[in-house]
Length: 268
Image (tube, rainbow, N blue to C red):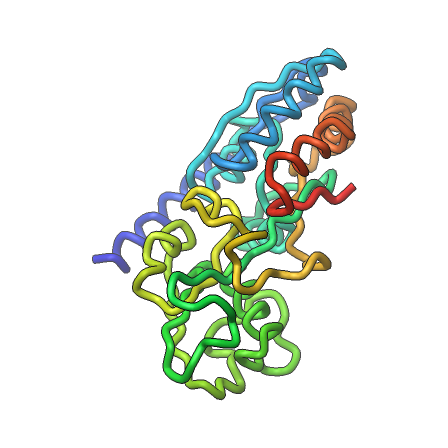
């Protein structure tokens, strides 16, 4: 039944995107943007960006989504003008799979993925046969596997970049049992696992603080930094640069550093 629902969901997404491709765009409103974000930290940050942008005469309407795919679907469809929530690898995967004409226009933050546990205090305590959770979507699954490799738990096949899966594990010396789960649900199932890789947004929603609670944290030079994204036809619209400038302001940077205390890293 779960497989059937997945097929139906992807079919619906394809229909939506096909319909979206028939829409025409045009220049964005020079004084107002509708910005899509995922609920949680991206919404919090955009509220601050909205405040800063208003001082420059730019009105921002925020639309929050609970699903990782829908802000891109809404952008292609024209329901929103911009989105701010995703990493470059996630964007590239979406563009390839759905033939979406989207472009990143500015770097924002890094939400370091962390490994969390309610049973152990250090990643070195993981023992043979333990259950380890990771996201089941291609982008975040690859990200988690590379973190596990950095932590010395596994070795991936040579040359695997972008969308590694558990099938690409070349060495698993502890014979760990890797359990693939929906990214939004991993934190809720942490009690049933020895440890799991969890995205920062979902960690924070479940009272897990990356800087305090992670037993292993993604490095700051990760390729999974977040970006502001628009339809390619609008990448040079002056209002887009106005948004980027507001986001990458010292006021927003200070807000991020004080609010998230190292769990979210501004890239400027």
